[in-house]
Image (cartoon, rainbow, N blue to C red; front, side, top):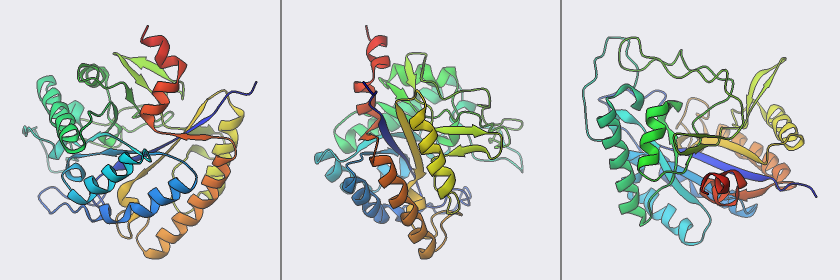
Amino acid sequence: MEKKKYFIITIDTEGDNLWEWKEGTALGTENADFLKRFQNLCNQYQFKPTWLANWEMVNDDRFVAFAKNCLEKKQCEVGMHLHAWNTPPFYELPREERSGLSYLIEYPEDVMREKIITMTNLIENRFGKKPVTHRAGRWGMNDTYFKLLHEQGYIADCSVTPYVDWRTSIGQTPGFAGPDYSKETSEISFRQGVTEIPVTILRTEKNGVLWLRPNRRNLKEMLYVIEKNYESEHDYLMFMLHSSELMPGGSPTFKTEGGIERLYEHLEVIFKEISRNYTGVGLEEYMMLHEYFADQQK
């Protein structure tokens, strides 16, 4: 009997164009008005996006109204995405002129815990349900972070990006850099009480690392990832995108309305292909279905 395959859509739901945002300037959340089109496309294929939402988006009434409506219809899930630099409580880290935005894992453990509690409580207060799924801001995880997520009742994380080294992405503290996942694989694992479900990334000799993540130029590569993943032992396929990439000018990748139309053209193609062999599930729903999680809870 052929094993069932699941399709997980994860959306880093955050403010507008954080790639070019500078601390001290206004942080917009206009992309909240551009999410419905994507959700409607998911509904068409009975896919269920997991909106992994951060501080500014969970404080945006437009996003909350949109997501609550979809939650009531069981069309989506809401998880937590934490950007340390603007999630209370505030704590001043050392910085230098060339500092980047901070990773949560740069902070003392008690500050990390408080920021996680703040985000968890905010989501629960806004949506009436405690979040149990998570992705780290800037992909930055370590054992302490996993342990603190477990403390707060999280069951799944999707921050690991197999074969990708983020050490060129500097933090705020002088000398601090992002995590190195270059030796990670796409196998599900159990870390400090939390199940790690890595992003679907393929490593090839010819093209390097290939994600299921649209960038306007990679339709052929995404179809290749879908095909190879289906042929593999993996029972899930994970797509990722940022909410701001669904809005013209919300990212460096999709700057114009034409760019957004190209994005949706590619989404139509890959969603149609994926729907042939995969069942759409939310990240939490996948955990409930997955034998690995069931084994860990015994």
